[in-house]
Picture (cartoon, rainbow, N blue to C red):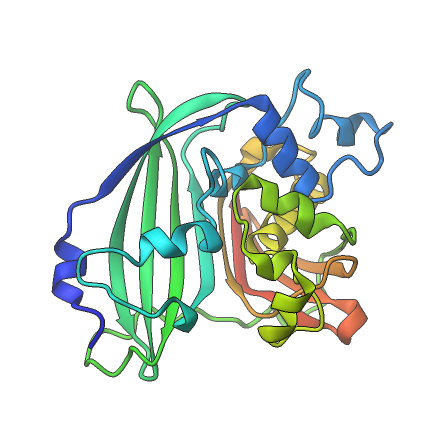
Length: 290
């Protein structure tokens, strides 16, 4: 087996320092499609350094990025884990926000394998990252679920079951987020330079008609849609955001997010209307502050 679960879980965390500036935040927001309506004061707040707001999903790229394409080569070079990178897939992502992310700052980020689940034909490696500011105060915690095909069947815990069932009623809101044809080219500048998102020839070899949008870009687009559409444009109201990546999206297509609200819990389902409602993000929940 290519995964020694005991060794992976017992390994000491790796630690790095992350620095970012307002320019990094603006670039990230542009990669999510912010600023198209450049004269709209609410939209300008995402892309202009004066009184700029920061989406909590910026945590995914703060200080060199923590996206799948950026982490996979280093992240799989861990004690107890030796996997062919062609077997891995970014299956899910979670984020818990402990404090508002400043527009510029420094954080210490600790990474560790928090769990390894046995899904039979695949293993799921849960890579946890925790960030603290210069005073040691928690900023955010993320959980990346990495699916490793062909690495299951070792008799381990299958992990928690997460329901994908949407409420049996019409969605309370449906949020529509067009993406630009150049969006993946902009988003990749925040850290994930995987050619799958830029090179047409590489994308075809991977089985796609053309380059696809990053999964974490879709994650950020949906977060921004919810903040703009339901949270009065206030990103500090997002407490946590968890999803599974269910399908690819081509730049230029639309993300349509259905939202069901139950007090401070939002259930989300993101689909692509240009492809008959094909799921993009499922098993999605967001906890918000009142």
